[in-house]
Length: 118
Image (cartoon, rainbow, N blue to C red; front, side):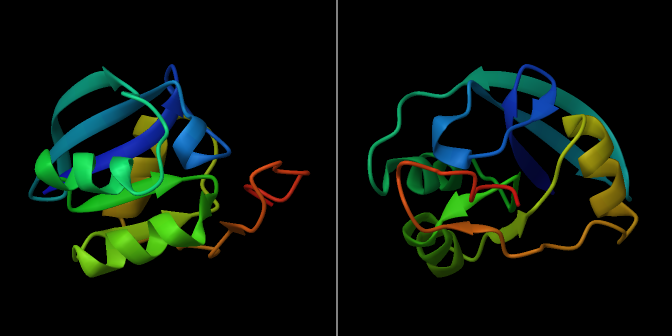
């Protein structure tokens, strides 16, 4: 399974589309077996969910995300986990243990007046 975490360096970011990078974790048998970081190629409506789908991502973890991105991920069969925080690797480990549950933290405005990740 391939899990992407919207990040600022090694930390989960509050808003998916404006992250600095995506930490991509390859997992097998409930363990992380490989990790890579790729820069965010740019925030354009609908682009990032398709970009991550093309990379073979099965799960996306972020602090918050807009509803349009959530819909596209759902259409692609990619599980969306929102409300995460802390280190990206820790979030993935918690997910693999079944202990990371989505809060459904959907951003409703692009100005992000404290709504994302709350």
